[in-house]
Image (spheres, rainbow, N blue to C red):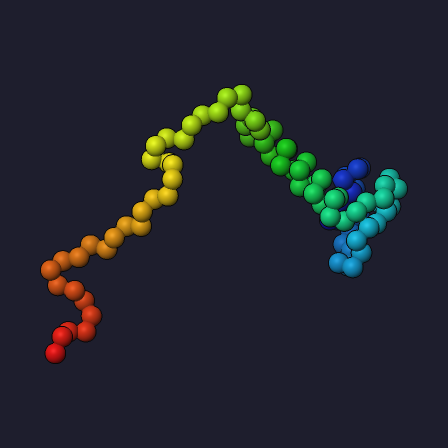
Length: 88
């Protein structure tokens, strides 16, 4: 990630072999993967806040019957005649 999860400063691109780095602005020592995960989690929280949705509803609402399980694949509609190679 190019953004420091501690101070939010964009520190710029880094080659993939750089697994840890120190933020030039705040001095935080960051692991590349953990820093990215923290940034994703923060972004998800902001998106939920902006939409006004609750992250964990107070009670569980069961799915409607037509929403549960797997749905059978629709079968093709056949007429009396099948397309393809005719029988000789």
